[in-house]
Image (cartoon, one colour):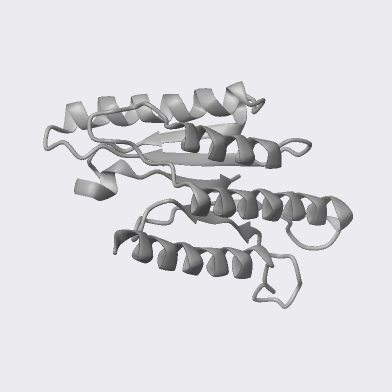
Length: 182
């Protein structure tokens, strides 16, 4: 049941990400005045916290703005595909990545090669004790960042947010969100 819900939410996230990644016309009607917003989540019902992935603003950005947007779209698609095949989850009281999770992170790292797209990673832990949750959440974020770095992604391209028990409780606290960031 949970897997079906996760697939449904992931499907919705993919569609929303693709729609957002296509860009939109701003209030003044100038195409490209708003950036792309790429979001992928490995959790059913997890909060989406995507950030602008490409900030092309108005005239004069030309091909450079499009190239950045295309790279962000490519990375967003890779994140969504990798997380759909193998969500980045942790077992209770653990910060150890499974081989499937490492493989998914490797696919994301491949998509990040040859561009300057940055990603944001949000990890959680659901202990009632906020301090204990924050510590485990930080270890989980470090494990993911280290795996990406080991796959060739520079540290400065990965922003981590260890939320502890602030944003997710119970089973949802075992899941990780990965988004394209500015």
